[in-house]
Image (cartoon, rainbow, N blue to C red; front, side, top):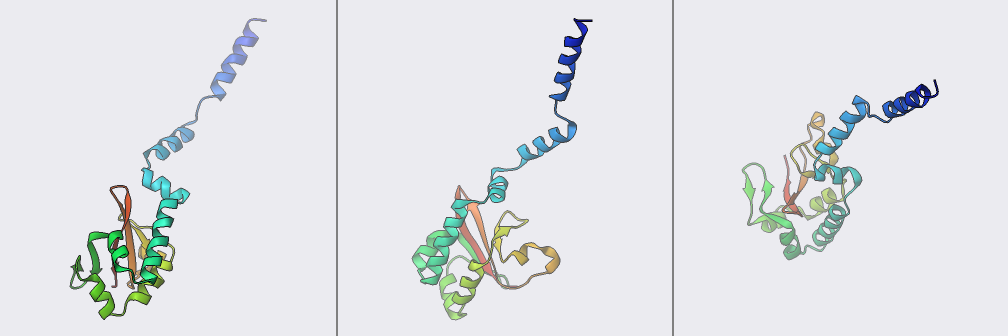
Amino acid sequence: MRFVTPLLLAFVLALTGCQTSQQKAKKEALQKKTQAELRHEAGDMDFDAFIGRLQKAVAAHDVSSIAQMMTPNFGYQLSPPLEGEGVFKYWDEQNLWPEIEGILAEKFVAGDDGYMVAPPQFADKSLHYDGYRAGIRRINGSWKFAYFVNG
């Protein structure tokens, strides 16, 4: 009997230390998440700093700074599709600078397509948002302003 009790106690302790199937599934799901997903969940200081610099550059109409923060194929009109060169002229002609400032002041959320988008209503497909929106994406480790479109 003296020998059975410690053996039984060791067996019980070993069983309670094992992960349940739910715990194991949770751990596997967390490991499957990409680094970008984890970064967005925890808050990304790099992203926040990028948005801050972009907001200041737009407020100052600093086109050279904004251009450095944009993707080469920056989208600025959906129909007909326009991208790349001519964006600043288009913004001036359409008097879009206040609109851009307003959208960039909105909260950015993760969209379905891998972009961080503002306003948050755009990410919710059930709302059918068709106003101005901005998209920012991480490219080669850096955040880039990818589009500002309407429609």
